[in-house]
Image (cartoon, rainbow, N blue to C red; front, side, top):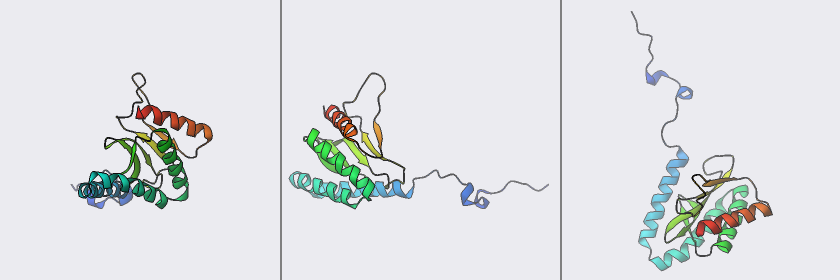
Length: 158
């Protein structure tokens, strides 16, 4: 009796489920490795001056919808928590305290998602009971949204 099983090789690409990293995820990991190599080559003073320029340059490269959001988030973070230092983190704008990321902006285009994200690390002081949000979808920003982000950044920065 012949076996009716098909080998994994004979299934079509459409039938396969992707279980590895996407091209975008691999690109972000490579970017992070490059950021670490670049930071290691610089002195601490040069890193601070260059980091904000790198963040602004990365924001300028974004498609218009993401760029507008990222610029506004950047202005809010710098105004609300000037002690958070801008830096690149996985090729995205991030803001750190003592070198550790507290919050970050993730472009929708970068990972081909329908919205950009404002995210917070575990270092953000956002604890509220036993459960609280650590990321927010951004599709546009009203004055009320900007005020809310300012409050979140202020709380996160402690």
